[in-house]
Image (cartoon, rainbow, N blue to C red; front, side, top):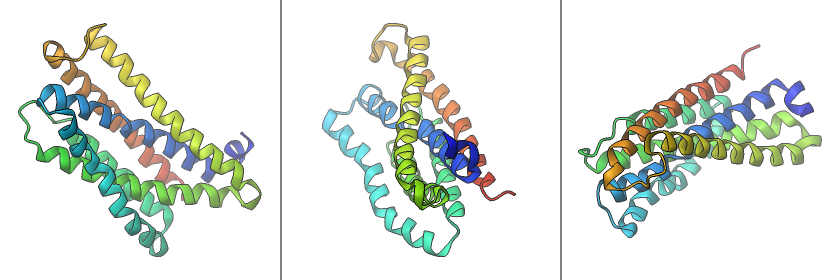
Length: 205
C-alpha cells in the first residue's frame, strides 16, 4: 500500500494494468457464446478460432521485447493499450450477420495489444518499485491482473442478469445476449480510455 501511495509511476502503471485487464478479459467469454450460439459453430471449431488471439500474442511478444529496447517503455505500453481499444471498438460492431473474418481481425488487435502492453508495463512496475521491493511489486502485479479479470466478469454477470434474467444463453435469448455484448463492449472501450490516460500520465511531471 505504501508503494501505491508514495510512488506515482508505480501506482499509475498498476492502475493501467487493472483497467486494461478489466476491459478485454471477457471478450473470449462473449466470443465463445457468439460463435457457438449465434453462428452455430461446434465447440472444436470455436476453440480453434479463439486460439488465434493467443497465437498472435505469442508471435508478437518478441516484437514487444525488441521495441522495449529502442522505444521508451511507456510509449510501447501506450501503443499496446490503444490496439486493445481498437479491437474492443471493432468487436462492438459485430452482429449475427457479420462474416467470420472480423473476429480474426479483432483477435489480432487484442493479441498484439496485450503483448505490447503487458511486457513494458510490467517492466515499468518492477523498475519503479526499486530493488528492495521487486518481490512485493511482482506479487501486486499478479493481484492487479486477477482483480481486473474478476471485475470484468462481475460486469458481464450483472449485465447478463439485466438483459436475460435467469434464462440461459440460447437461440431464444440470442437478441438479448447480443444487446448485452454490445453494451459491455462499449463499457470496456470506455475503461480502455482510462487505461490509455494512466499510461500517458506516467511521464507527466
